[in-house]
Image (cartoon, rainbow, N blue to C red; front, side, top):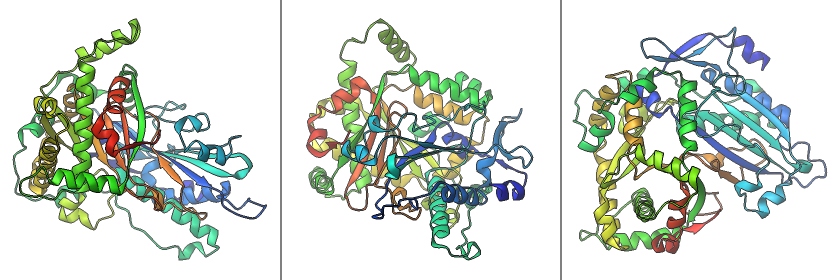
Amino acid sequence: MDHFVETVQSQCFLLNAWDLASAFTNIPYIYYYKNTENSLNRADFMPSGRLREAFFRTLEEFPILAGRISTGNDGRTFVCVDSVELNMPEYIETQSQTHFRQLEKMQFAWNSLPECAATVGAFPTRGCSGVLKLANVNIIRLKDNSGLVMFISIPHYVMDGVGYCAFVNRWAEVCSWIRSGLPTADLPTRTFSFNRSIIEHSLPEKQTPLYPAMHKIYNTPRYIGSILAKLSPELRGDILVGANCLVDATGCLFHVSRSSLDKLHYCVSGGVSSGKQFSDNDILTALISYVTSCAMQECANKPIKNGIIKAAAKQIGHSLVQNSSEFLTMLVLDIRPRLKGLKQAQYTGNCVTCIPITTKMKKIAEANISFQTLAAICTNVRSTVCSTDGELLSKLHDVLHSHSASHTNALVNAMIIQKKIVLSNQSRFSLYQNDFGNGIPMWVSPISIFYSNFASILPVHPESNGYNIYLTVESCVMKQLQQNLLWTKYVASIY
């Protein structure tokens, strides 16, 4: 750490609208490492000193994580690294009396975790010091050094999932190199870019107008959006945390095997007269959207039976949203492959956007588990994803940068739609490549509850196949979803 503190230079990073549009959430993952050493002396298993040394060596390549977020009077947001007054990442190490085999026995269920493993939740907000940290790490060493639980969270303000994985992968690489005993000077160099202007320089001059659903989300001003834009990041985070508490949300993890997904491919492709082939992403997006919308519709038809306080909170929440005739899927899309200048650049900032995909609720209600309906949703997903090219992104870039409240307006416009799901396909994230010198993690999971109406498609351990699916929705919706015949036929519950 001393070397980092002595060598880091003061600098400021101006965040762009792509950063701010994604800035409302953290990127938190929990990693489970098992000590498989056969020797009686297990001291060499991911020792604290080595992990810490590697962390701060990696921080030298990611100085932005020691910065402080601030918003100017003109609405622009900066991350400023002050070499005299650094905002160092939260780095905690604790000891637990829980043995790794206990976690294994419970299949790494969240309720088996040592207490306070996740030190932050879904939204970036002030920590114990009163300041928003740009990296939170909690390393929990398990009983008899039988394993390690590692919680790592980075706010979306400074990087997206690709940037997050770049940092954690590099930390693991440096740690593994130190363990090898090879000279640090021979460590392979990596180049990471934090220059936000790289996106603007990669955009084509020609533009395509936003399609209606995208225009509605990103180009409709909201009074509440203007207010949120003027707040400090910490206060905005406090408000989002409070709003999330009004929802009786629950999180669950599921698994869809390769064989089940192949069967779905076969059935859905048969629902298209042209015999069109869909990607795994198309199928899973359609399945999650379809089943979630059905579950939400079932809950909407049921009376509230949650008790006075919960019923009142739910009623207040529903009064603030629009009961649309359409179901909205906000699909998170990586824009790197769609912009030539970004394909090869090791850019760690935010290169994602949410593309809105709508489905008529009436069609879903009348479908009665029809593969033709699922095929129609797949077709809509594929068409929307394919049409999101550089020209459309160039127009969206201008819209996002046209007003200091564009990002908060988009947040409000999405939040007020009652029947929706935000879906992020994270299956390509290199979560299982983080080898700190003693092997890759046996299990990686999100936190127990993110924010309501969120889903992610996750990678599985190399020895497994298929995908894991994480869902956080209202408890009533989750109950209905778990009873859906289509869901239970192809998807297995983990916990």
